[in-house]
Length: 347
Length: 257
Image (cartoon, rainbow over all chains, first blue to last red; front, top):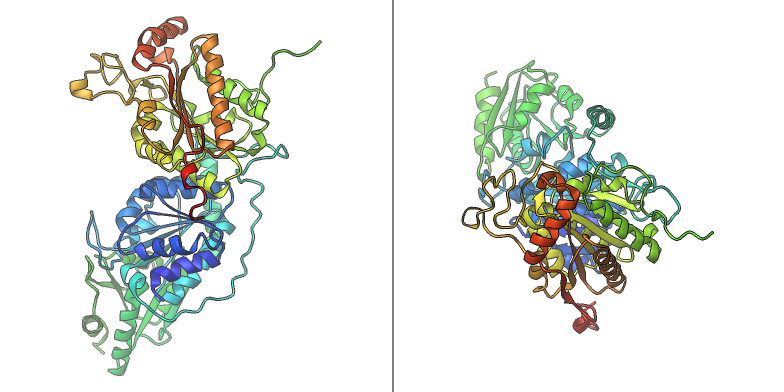
C-alpha cells in the first residue's frame, strides 16, 4: 500500500470522522483516498477552498468533539499555521499530516526534512507545542496515525505526523492492527449544543487579561511536562557499544541504517539513534544511546535542524557533526559511510 | 399580570462591552429572540469573528466557538458537516467577512452550506479603532483614509449581498437595517427566515445588517443613525437580493448520495 493511502486508511480506522483537504503534491493521494472511502465509512470528506479553510474546518469539527484531520505538504503547512495556533490555544485535539517537500517558498516536490524547525519550534504564533511523530515506514505511518488520534484526544492538543515525500509515495506491505478506539469523554468542554441540559460551552483562545492568559499557558505547559515524561519514543540500533552514533529520523534513517551496517562490516562501531517522536524529543533515550559514543553525526534532509535538539539533549557534552542534503536530494548510503569513516573510522 | 416584554432567554444577562449607541446590541437581541421563538438555543452553535463582536460568545447562551479572523464560515462548515442536524450561525463584521475572509464567504455560499451568516456592515473596522473597511463608502473619512476613501487609491467597496446573490448555493441574501422600529422588525423577520431555511436545508443564508459605529464615525448615536439613513442606505439599498423557493440542491435530489 502507498504511504499516503495508508495514512488515510489508518485515520479512518482510528475513528477519524472528517477529513478536510486541499490538493498539494506529494500528499494528494491521501485526499483522493479519503474522497473515495470516507463517505462509505460514515464520515465527512470535503475539499476546502484553501489550506486555511481546511484547518479551520478541522477547528470547527474538533470543537464539537469529533475526530478530525487535515493533511498537506510544506507550503500548505505554512498556511495552516494560523489555524494550528488557534487549535492549540483552544485546547482542541486534531491530527495534522505534513508530507514534507523541499523549501523554502514553493521549493520543490521531492522529499525533504526541512520543516523540522517549523514542526517542533514554530508551527504558529505563541507559546505552544504539537505532538510530532516521525514515521520511517508505511507500517509506522499506520501505527503513528492511530496513536496520534489517541494522544491528541488524551492531551487535548494537536498532533502531527511529520512524514516526507519519500514515505508518502513509497509502497510497502502493511497490516492494519485491530484498533480499539479509546473514547475520551469530551462532554465537559465540547460545543455540540447544550440541549438545555448544561451551561453553554465556549471554545476560544482569547484572554484579554494578561494573568488569565498566562495561567492558560502555564496550565498547558504543565501538561507538556507530563507528556515529556510519558510520550517519548525512539529506536536504538547497535548503540550499546558504538563509537560513533548516527542520528536520523524518518526516511533518512532507512538510508543511515544501511550505512551503519556497512560500517559494522568494515569493523567500525557505528550505531543509530532514531527518534520516533520529535516533540517531545527523546532526551533520555539519546543519552542512553550515546553513553559510550565518542562522536555523534546527525544526518538529515535539510541544512541541519534536528542537530539543535541533539546538542540540547546531550548538553553539548560530545562533538555533534552534521551531514545533510536538501532541496529533495536524498543522501546515499555511500556518502554517509564516507562521513562515518571521517569521524568514526580513526581507531 | 402578563409579561409583554422581557429579555430573550438566549441572551445572557450581563453588561456588554459595546460602545453607547452601537447597534450590535439590537442585532444580538433580535437574533436571540429568534433562537427563543424557534426554541433552538440548545441545538445551536454560534461562531464569533475577530472584531468588535469577538466576545459575543459571552453574551449568547448557546454553545459558541471563536474563529480566527475571517475564518468563521470555514469553522462553521466544520461544525455543520459533522453535526448536520444542529443549527449553526456565524456573526461577522465587514472586515472579517468581506476582506480577510472573502474566500471563506464566497465558498461557504458556493457550497450551499446550511448555515446562517449574520453580517454586520458598519463601513469601518471598529475594534482596531476605525480603519477603512472593504465596505467603507467612497469619500468616507477613516483613520487610514484621512482624506476620504479615494477609489483610485483604495478601490471600491464590496457589495456583499449583490455578490452572493450571483452564486447558486445562496438560498437567501437580504440586506436589512436597524435604524428604525419597522426596520428592526424587518431585520428580525429576515433572521428568522434564515434559520427556518437552515432547518429546511435550503442553502446558505446571509443577512446583511447595516449598523452604526458612533465611536469611530465620530458622531453621536443619533447622528450615527442619521448617517446610516442618509449615506449608507442609498449606497447599500435594503432588500432581498436572492430568495429561493426550494433548496438550492433541489434539482440534484435523487442523485448520488
